[in-house]
Length: 594
Image (cartoon, rainbow, N blue to C red):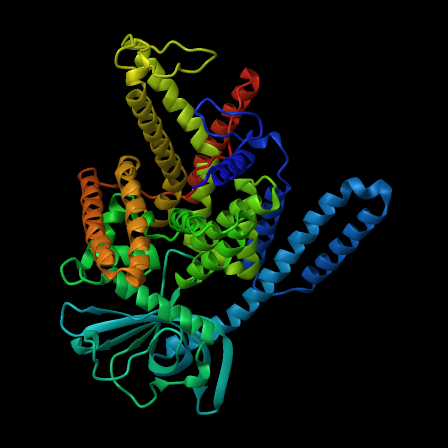
């Protein structure tokens, strides 16, 4: 990277993360609630309206009157000078009513469709569905013989003897049972592929889940004449091209190592491409018990690494700085669509694009604003995402990291200082900072010869404290949700995440390099695949170490979840008050992202 590029990136990060001067830890600070964040209130009001609309049995006339009245009130407040101070409240009321009406209308349509499927499931007879295959089918061998192919069908038509009944696009999981030869390169009959339109017959069932919406499962056990391709329901050319790219990327990640390390290849494909169904149940349970299953979710870790590699490619090819965000945007959006468009991936993509886009418009970016904007986009597009466990865990963990990492890291640094004082290795400070080259081991200021080693050691120690703070914050926020939805608590997850997260970074980094080398230099791609097999094996061993401390089986009520978060909020407010009293800057918006 040239000096000009380095200076530009440094100035950009300074604008992004600094609002009140540099911090003690050397990273740029943002003073938490010292500046207004109107988008946070808008997001909270929009989410409240969406939640209320999802819990209504249908659309009512009072909702429309509320929306029209709030709009009229907002226009009056904006027009009359004496009422302008109330325009913000009127705008929030209007956004609340819009979210309420939008969620209520969508809920009414979904309830009608759900009643149709509920009637078909209660009948216990074979039915026929038409739709487009949304996910790439995964085939697994069954213990009692045979194989099962699983994919998601976006059902849009229910054909019957009276004609075709069109419904709102509804995801239905298809379990297609057949011979083991389905896994061969040349199956005995044509199998569905992602992006193709199909008509499939089978028996419909409803499977209850931990989320508010049950899963519709269409089980197909025998061949029939009703199951056939429907070319008129095929997805668009862009969607089919993305599915073909995803299949080619999946083959490239398993080239040369799939037969020897099938579990490792399944982990890599899940972490990079979102193929969660290929992971063996035993391996997934190991990561769940150790509290490290979050590494499979396409989140800020994956999008950030991909964005960093793309920026490196842009620098290598000397792409102008102004054009880099424009080139980065379509590539990241294509990657999110390629991995299925999950809420965590959309959230991290929006936040990453806002961070890099701030360089282009030369305006400071804010992580909390980016998080709120991502939530607004997701809920505006699909209100039902508010009930999705993936969105709940992703956004809550990210918000916990942004708010709780600074106080937790400050607490860890304070404890480390007390331990140093007790052992007689207290650091002499200059204006509250360590002198360059100070060593905790000797308690003296050495000469410049050994300063480089001690600087590296000090940075490693600080990074270790940062990783421990991130892991602790993530656990504190996700533990009540895990206990409420899954009935388990895993305290060992705080320690297991310390080695697993860096290994996950290496896996994603090597996987992206493998995909690049698959086109440029296949032998180097094969080397990356073998290195990834070693990294994933080490990840599984680290996750198995967490099994020595078993999970705590517990039953958490919703009231206990509220009490847990209330305690965390009070602790955060106490930290903020202490920072204001002592005049020390705090960064509630930190550079760590999930």
